[in-house]
Image (cartoon, rainbow over all chains, first blue to last red; front, side, top):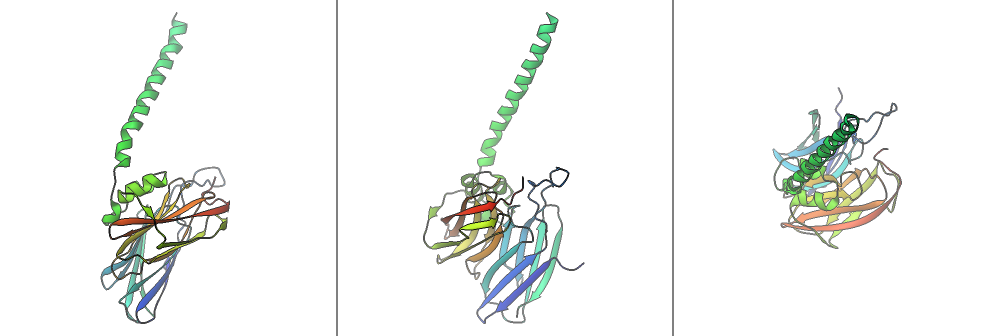
Length: 103
Length: 163
């Protein structure tokens, strides 16, 4: 399966800007389906960005984060060509991991 | 007689049952109000995400209260046509930032997202949140052990929490 994570990490020499888009339903648990039955909550709880074995950004998410979540942040100390590791875990225990090259 | 006492007894039983449920409910409150201090460690702050009001969620997440600061800049639209996708961003000029959290006051659960900002990461986050209706969005920045907040009202045309 193709990765659910799309990342773009660009370095300007000093600061690396990271944008990530993840495919996930992020069901809040408050929405009903066409039969009027509640769709159970299903959302990413933790999203982690690791550089050089160290966390550079950790997100704790609740169901109020939009479907197919997007996040943007920046960090210092990385070089072009280095790897950035991204992983998430949802409330049902599913997870995904990917590695992006900083460009 | 039996025809009268029967329903009455049932009624009393039901009332007693309701009373004990109410008592159990009250008994749980102190636990819920206990600060989980999840922001300080690596665990997912489950309790904070369960709190309904923004004040309770802030207390459960950080165990303290925030003061408004003009050094926290909250960027959110005046009007969001689709409450399901509201772009919200925060930047701050504060030093020693360790975390940034987003709350939507009148969502079913106020805490929407909480981000840990390790050393070397720029204290600036953009994300997209769901909003049930027109209400305040609150951003909290934890810097040097203190909490600073910024608040902005976002008008929501179509709510994003269903129902």
